[in-house]
Each structure stands twice: as C-alpha cells, then as structure tokens.
Image (cartoon, rainbow, N blue to C red; front, side, top):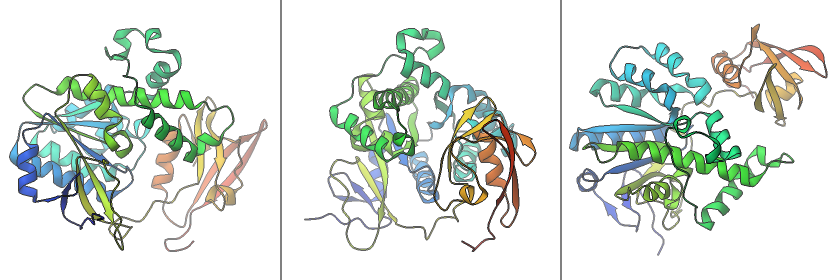
Length: 359
C-alpha cells in the first residue's frame, strides 16, 4: 500500500508517522543530524530553520556544519556568530558569492538564528581549487597540510556511482565533449569526504552536530553518510523534506531516515530571480560563456557560446560570482550593458531585464 505523506507531518523512513515531540526526543541523543535541501528552495530552508529550533530546544549544546562555505571562511563565520559583523560585511568577508552563489536571503534567517543563540557555525566544505586538485591530481599529490589532513574517500557502492553518472547526464556540462565522467565522480567524492571530515572533527565533543547540505549528498545513505561511516561516525540520522503534491506520490524506499511533508510547487516560494540563461566558467579575461539557453535573455541580447564577458555595467569581471551578483541586483525593467570579447573583437551588448510580470 502506498504511503501518502501529509504536509506538516513527520514520517519515519519506513512509512510511519511520528509526532514532532517524540521525534525530537529521539534525535536529541544522536551524534550527527543531517538536514538536506534543494539549494534554491526557500521552503526547504524554512524547514531547516524550524527543525534546528526544535532540536535546540531539546539540546542547546549544538554546532551547525555548512556545505555553503569553505574552511577559509571560518574567521568570518566566527565573527558573525559573535555578533561582530553585519550582513554585508559578513557576506563580503566570507566571499559568499564566490564560494556559493545562491541568494544569501535563502540562508540568512538560519544565520541569524545561530547568531542570536551563539550557536557555533563551521565551514565544512573546501574551495573549488582544492577540490579540483584532489580530483584531478590525486590525494597523494596534495600535501596533507594543504588538504586539512583529510584522508581519501572510501570507495562508494556501484549504485551511487550510477546515480552520479545519471546526474551528470542531466547537467549541461555533461553534454560537452571531452567531459570525463570519472573526473566528475572523483570531484563528487572529494566533496562528500570533505564535508564528512568536517562533521567528524566536531563529533564526539558533547554537542549535537547538525549538517546542512544538498539532498544529493544524503539520499539513500550515500555520499556524506557513507563517508562518515568510513570515518567511524555511524550514529547519524538523515532528514529530508518531501514535496506533497496532488494525489499520492510516495517517496522512494530508503530515501532518508526521516521525511517531512511540505506543500509542493511554488505557492510559498519567492519569485524566482531573473537569469541570463547561460552556463559560464572563469576565464583570465573575465567570464567564458559555455552555453546559451534557448529563448533566454542572453540569447535575446546576442550572447553566443564562446563569448568572453569582460565587463558588466562598466565593471571588469574577475569571476563568475561577480557577474552573478550583478544580475541578482539588477532591477526589473532596466538594461545591463556587457562588454564581450568575441573572436578577438570587442562587442557591446545590452541585456534587457523584463518588467515584473512580463515574459
């Protein structure tokens, strides 16, 4: 018989509903709790915040591990929790746009909760450069002190490798010739191991460790839970939100230890930010365009694959994060001038951002 989750209700992974009070009483004794998310879903972050508050009410000795920031951001996190930085200063010092890129408004309520209660927040990720070095050069090629003493990842089960290859096939980068699936898998394993290592360093010190990260690193006990077990941390629970839509869509068996029903769709989501509709990569001259979406603002403006966006709004671009930040701040109904290098020539383009409500 299909298990139909109900919005606002907790369910154990086996399909049994459980009261919030009973669940929190069980979870407070655990060593590590892992809360998954879709990064761009505000409703997922609201659920994370409410779950953190419920756990904190039962066990105030808590530490929160974050996928969103690499270890270099720890001084900024410490200063934020201590109440020494405002939002803008924190985001700048943590280099949020470079490290993560998602709208900080999705996460700031959680950050303010931690600051108000002085709950330590720990950056458990590593930057893209180190992740690439480990994935491409191998762990032995990177000195131990340059990889935060992390050990190589445990070999994952075949089903996890298959799921990563399937994920790559749906990613725009996977369509580019020469992109090696093994390189992609190696990068994901580095990512999993880095976060598991960061969580393991905090475990066993008396506090409840709660990790916030993407659902793909947690589903079916693969990814981070698997690497945690290899590091000797097995007293873990994976909690995931589950969208409840029309009809009955039962969750896959074994998806998580605990699920929480949310109203599906975009009814309770903020309006999606306008996007250029391009896939980009860093380039020494600015930002390289790898792909332009059909019917996108970028295509309407005349951007093409292979273009180098060197300036936006008159500002020279040093990273994709700078372009993302400019686009996020662009008001509806305005123009964004771009300076583009195309086949050695400089071309000036204008991106027209639609008025709110327009196509």
